[in-house]
Length: 415
Image 1 (tube, rainbow, N blue to C red):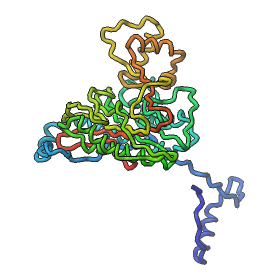
Image 2: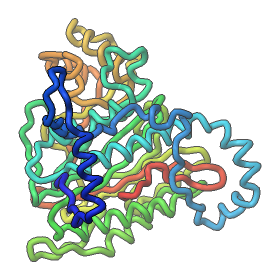
Image 3: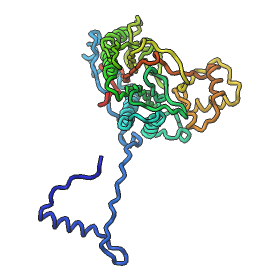
Image 4: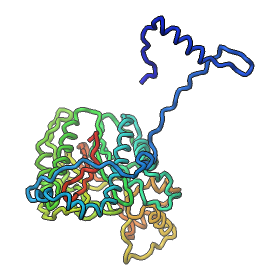
């Protein structure tokens, strides 16, 4: 946008004012010379990315979107809401506020990158924009200088999976992959505060032929959110998601596809410093009679595809996470021991990627890393792919199950 603005015709009275202002702008130097005007310096645009505590000095963060529970057997929970809220929910207020803080950071980070995304960008550039903003908002710009590097910061590696790749792809150092106009990119971002993780994702496409694919998955995700609630069976959520997603069709390059759920991908419960805490929220009917419970923290995410609806592992690994080492022998290699200490000190049980090790100054660590994977100290997570030539989309929100209502904590104006 140009800095110039249209100037209306000057009236006689205004001419005098303009002349006075012009004289006032003249600068007399020390030698008495006059007639020189100050050059108008172009003001630098302020960078609005700063620690979130500076924006919210009282450290009370915005609540997400509140939703009533839909199920009949949950109706009684709204009749004595105030008492339940005070008795049970207030004890979790510190945790909820941490999640809301992470959610506010998540909204600001994605708004920052959404304004910049365009075809021709390197995926490493996209990841840097997202992760550097997250680090700045959380004050985790240099983990080596933090008293507690896992107190807040990035919750897991930034997912930038393209086309038939549905999840678990982020560029390793040196990756030259470019975002193209015809690509469908899933952007999956994690922010954590005191180990409480906000997990939310959306899909980017520039070509309108993919619009119905994105609409199907977004609708399916919000269906899952609507159906979620205390005492709800997980299979029932999956069944509702599947029904909605399969009701959509998309025409790509002249061929019509029914949108299918990726049946072996799912949402999940979230625990402190644990992105997958044990419960899986299916996106198809699977017979799981496990119920959601009061006070739980879930990521509701769905994946739709034009392919076969089933993903398999394949490609260069970028994602890793620490596993419990109880009962395992200590690594034999000195380099593996040193690397494991770096992982424990800077990430704990939070997922991380190879770029994060590079940033910490680790060098020539692949042999040691593979050794830790083989011995069971570290789990690797390869990219997850549908058939080549297919297109996958993802939408995801984090929800909190309060006694009286559910809170879609990561909801924003964008999705």
